[in-house]
Amino acid sequence: MAEIALVREFFGKQGYVKVKFLKINDPETGKEVIRIKGRKRGYRFRGEIFGDLYAAQRYVADRIAEIDEGVSPPRST
Image (cartoon, rainbow, N blue to C red; front, side, top):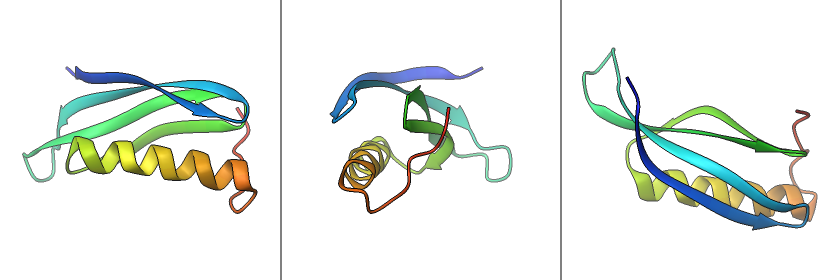
């Protein structure tokens, strides 16, 4: 069962995106990792896995900035 580590809203050009950071146990390594979930039109985060909470938050912020600048194409929801 996933435990919610953090729920945070990030601000982008299309408004706020609510993202959940979940603590899960990786079945392959047996270590605790962070998985992210959240979406809004143009922004979608599903199933990306990170070693720590800081790296996961940094990824979400960078990805939103890339989508807003047009560097990275938005994902359809």
